[in-house]
Amino acid sequence: MVTVPARRVSVAVSLTGVAALVLGAALVLLLQVIPPTDAISPTRRTISEYGLSDHKWVFDLAVILVALGSAAGLAVLARQRRLPLPAAIFGTLWTVGLLVIVAFPKPDWATVSHADFGGTLHRIASVVAFVALPLAVLAAARTAFPASPGRRWLARVLAIVSLGWFAVILGAVVVAALEDGRWWTLIPLGLVERGMALTELVALGVLLAPVGEPR
Image 1 (tube, one colour):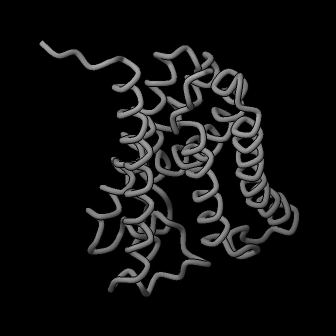
Image 2: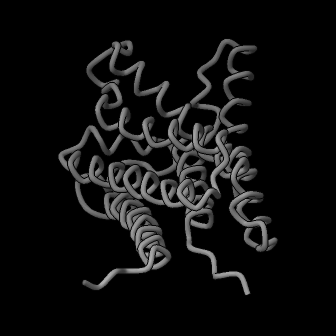
């Protein structure tokens, strides 16, 4: 009976997780170039808008792939004892948040005037997921890369940039509250959200990619 070394299994699972992230991101990009979703403004409309289109299944598949890839890669880090408890908690919130986004689609503001229970869950899950992931990367960077200062630095910088994107949204919310306006009209929300999502996926990819064996 042939046994496969545990490290080779871990590397294979990690690479599969990263591949799932890349494929999920590619599917979202595909939605922006094929009709009818090519008509959705990438600067003003959020990514969840794709979930209201005829290509909802593509959007759902993309998000599920990212969730499964995240779970697989984080599980490898946990098994290798390279994922501290706070990072594991934040990583779980990210993964569960993505699944909630799929289970409870964004409200269609063309047909409703306010969010129902599912729409509210969608909003909460989106915020939790987008905030939890960079916090997970920040919490894990030191333990995940004890002998790789370059990877550790890159992961931290990408996580901080991700939180910076979110800060732009928070700033718009604060300004709108003070001026009694609509915060989503103050910034190119779709562009900010896409920038945040891309930065976070790259940060996660840096965290999950296998590290070389110590020499």
